[in-house]
Length: 561
Ligand code: F6P
Image 1: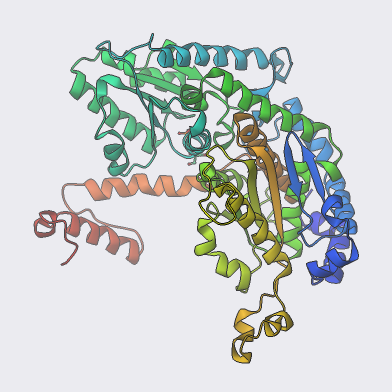
Image 2 (image 1 turned 180 degrees about the vertical axis):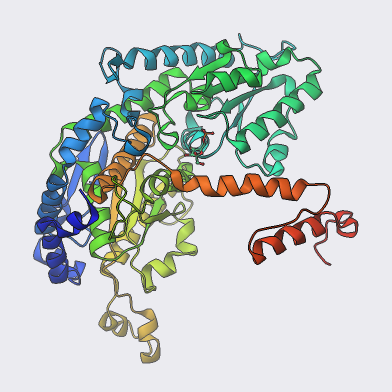
């Protein structure tokens, strides 16, 4: 299907006409027309409650989006993904992260081979290793217990593990220290290791390809740091493990096969936090809880696979994202978890959503004639309320919001004095109030009725009609985290199906990497090299070399000339 065909589809055009009719209707009217809207425009699965009543849609919108999804072959594409078809067409491979959480005994064939036993064989090895480290049987080179775990990776080999560790910190072994090094900026490595005893430190080198510049550079730094402290090449075997699909490169680095945990080319980096890339998560929370997380993922997979689109949470979220982007003109989505443990969730989602759907051509390579992946960003509530929410409420841009909250806190803290209750009630009151304020706003008449001076009325008026979705669950558990991540994974896929793009490749990251390789040589050459870039790039290289080599500034921390 080409671009022209998507825009030419009667279902797409019907949505355009529909948007022209209802696009400016106010949420106040939608709610006034339908007292049961809250119940009608909500769905529930695997312990997640999805309230999308504050989206600017009516029953006809959902019907038209459903019709578009059918016309774009969404049910068939979902089946193809679960079947292991090569749906990542530009790399000619399946995108089969659902196999990572398939229970033992299920059968999923990739090129005629059942991959489920392979997945469980790796999970079993991870479990034996993790329990050995956690239980103190597997020790460091000098016999000391391995209390510190440093996971080195970047992108999908880092963001998922960091997010999961932070999200599930309440369930982690508090006698152990977990740190994550991703940036090639030496500060990241130095700060992560400066106060640790190498004899107690385990490094997990996570890289699907095992060729990524940042990760390999940091892995070599880790090796030097470890050997400088322990003084024996043999120490590498006790202090380094690798997670990769590239056994040859892992061996070249000096990590033996028994210390490598594998995964497969059909697992995309940003879809890999529940593969061996999650080894740090398993070390932190233990095998049983890791399995609970996988069960959560699987529950959402099954829901996605088997539920009609109109009640299917990932399908609804994906289709609403299309509605907001392509028919209401929104360009971003704010992800606002009212849960401190989810502080890295927006960062994790940025790679998941934007590396997946930031594409400019269809699967066949034709330019798209519509916007694709919106910009995802966000911060935990309530902090964001005192920062960027001003723009959400009164700015000129439409920013659909995803609110995420849990009814039970993992850290009850009673509120002192009047009203009592727990701080968690204050947190959730804010979540609920923000969605209400965004949707309904405050009219000029309401402001005047409060006795506000006429000159201030425009400043204190909120137009409202700003859409949001709220995801509510009982408690942040490993299971709930699995359901939440799978919800977003599949919602990204749904969007990609509608836009007819390959959500599983990432060619857009290559050019910068290639240019950086050439630039490194120019920065490190002993003599100033002849430069053949554009004028700006040449000048930046000259300036950098001059400032770096300037002994007068090197001696001081001051930035003054
Ligand atoms: O540069 C982007 C990317 O390829 C991501 O897609 C990937 O998650 C990340 O780099 C890390 O890659 P690797 O796991 O191979 O080191």
